[in-house]
Length: 113
Length: 117
Image 1: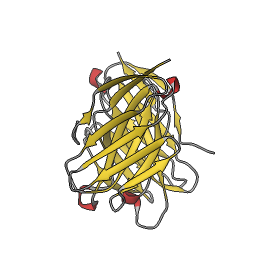
Image 2: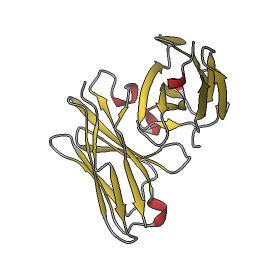
Image 3: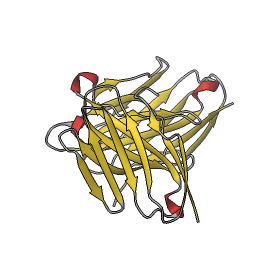
């Protein structure tokens, strides 16, 4: 991956448990976004956190951002079988790097019912 | 709510043929991005357009070109196709918000799955 690592690469949990995925990146950023992708399908936008924000919530999702460590985490609470998917973090580097998204390698989440 | 539309959804081509992928952004979105995702890989940025002008370029082969039209739709043209071009091609669009495109969400279309035989 161009951007860095996502940790873990794969995660298997029981329905109802919480899932935490971590993402690290290399450059200074304007924002960081999390996406979900069901097998071989489109990327669904989950949440955006700007570089001056530390935490953001959306429903069962909680995202944190630590710019000093260049890392972010995505927490999915009370997971459901329908949450089974690949999860990618993507950063928008600061303007000198352009306005593209730079993706991490992704975490494959499997929620067992 | 309207989403990004991509066509075709699936495309099968022979080596050395050409392909044109189309993207229709969400209404009132002025920025379009193209990404390529190989099997088991993360999406890789190809090229972007802001207000119909190319705004950034990534790892796009010289055999590929793209443009954004006056109605904001975009087309990715691929020539001399190679086996390695087989991938999912995503278009994303972003809204017109203060701060410029670097600060805004990107919303992805369903992708075009290109298979080169």
